Image (cartoon, rainbow, N blue to C red; front, side):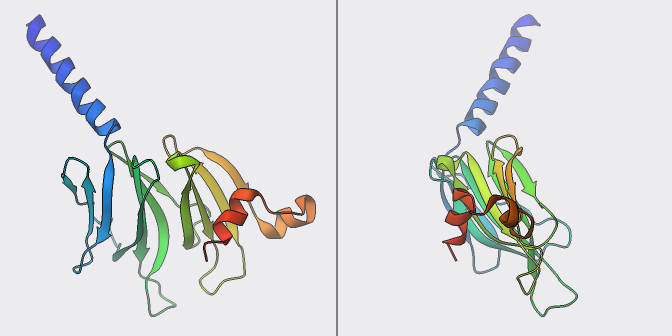
Amino acid sequence: MLLSGLRAMVFLGLVWASAAAETYVQAVVDQGGQLRILTNDRREIVPQKEPNQVAFEKPAISPDGRAVGWLALYPNCCTSYPIPLKLVIYAGGKLRTFTGTELPVWRWCFRGGGKQVAFEQETVHGGIGVHYELRDVKTGRILAKYDPDLNSEVLGARPEWVADLDSRR
């Protein structure tokens, strides 16, 4: 009994360690609109769409290969196209979803070698309610926020991470 319990603990430890050390080498949206992620050991991960989600967009792999991110698109009553309402990050076998202020997420990128993610949100036709967040990939914790309408009068210059994200237009 003790030996089988020990074997189960070792097995679970190996499963956890392999997911935590997983390295991603490819992330693409196929012709059918399905996101496909390939690991360095040639395993394919196929994330399922959330309820009401209609598409995946802008998949990217972190510079360290330890995380994959993409935008999840949803129907919108007021446009003829779906809008990106969520940034989803897959790392270490776990999905983490970022919605910020619940406005569309138009731009995003990994930072800090893949340990952080920055994203920009604003209204559908832009210019109103622009909001930026910098998050920790592993914990999801907010590291910084920036709202130009509020912060520009107080701080003046944009933070470097915001300037970097804005340069990726």
